[in-house]
Image (cartoon, rainbow, N blue to C red; front, side):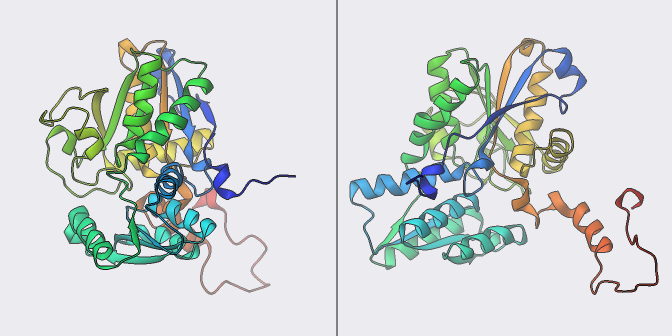
Length: 352
């Protein structure tokens, strides 16, 4: 018998070692790569952690009260986590996101959790999305803005949960910690904890190659949902206030590395087909960077921990699934062939 509710199941996700996906160079370097399976959270991503903590922190402070409406702007996974928790706690919820085709699953899932969804002009990017949401909250009494990009309850939950989990599960042995840059909360919170435990631990932040804003480069469009919003994040900015964004370290972050949109799809696909681990494009990006690091001479014999932020099944509207969807459309015609006179086997994918 248990008294747990769905919110109580957030966290304590598995940390697993991968072998078959490693490049020959990484294997020769005797590198141990461990992946933190954050898709095992009940809402399907690492963002469940911050959604829970930000709402409960606001409840404790009295900022969020019964009867209020919770509002957030998001690229999707945080919105899903917030919508799930609002459903469990009984809050009304409004999720704001760009009106883009790859957000189809996010829209549907948020709506299934009972949230309303506002879709903003894609051409206005993150600044337009942020401005719309802030204006919406300002004009409506009783609306609470979660504000994940600036809310200190975001990195703090990674310091108190994600970091300690990784340290214990890894056998207190982490040489590199790799995470994508969404809000910067995972990097700063988890990274701080791991660096306290091992001052030689290197924190690596991953951006899209098309949007390396934390190196001072311009933002261009990409398809790695969840990272690369196109503006420097508050939490990473505050690691070294006043320091220009450029090559090199920043506070506890040792390096900002990157993967392209196509590389993220390539490595997410490899992970599914060689290890049975299905992840989204941002996790493909972090794995690609892990492989780059694993081939360096200085990584020989080291332990690399990689965040897998979300499950791949959430991205069927994303180019990650394009090839499989095209095949499935041919394999499963509409309407189906109901003939009884054309044999038994109608499709063999090995011959596609």
